[in-house]
Image (tube, rainbow, N blue to C red; front, side, top):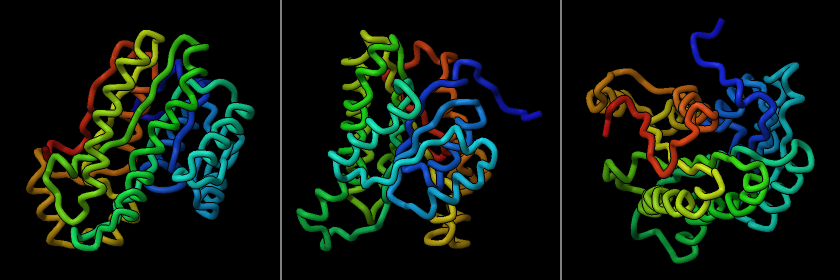
Length: 254
């Protein structure tokens, strides 16, 4: 038996997870499938999406994958429409997709800046726009937008990314006010440094790990399931009047 919570309200609930093929997103997908949810995943990585579906084994029937680039809003809208047709009206949206590529200030062009906003911020609004009428018809809904503690830490080396992740907070709060009268909740999750394969491969040096554990109140590395379990709670009816809030999962670093 799992030591973690089961949420009856999530069984058969239709959920969309963006950027769900790997990292934190894959763990979120796995956790929703384990709860008995019907999950639609949007990602542009075809191979990783197929590998995730295969890893689900007999539960793979609860996952409907659409390969799409979320920077293309027409493709995003088409993907949401396809998922709706496959799993029904969407009751939960997890705006997870993002790219934290590093970029020194002097290398940033207007075109690169706009592309970073498209990759890390813009699709969150248009995904919410695409599912809001489903949630209005249902009389409830939960939109969970992934931000980051990077801007709170004053992390350098990626100003477009930290700007976008800070803006996610403002977007979430604006959506919470506009959609709240329809019973739709909107919250942000701010992960700390999560030990995904990408993070470990690219940036986890012994020196960086020592600094991380010294900075956190609880000196223990965080992993994707630590974020997924927070997302589950925000999606479930257990948090039914929780909205317009930010939830930081970082071991007490900030």
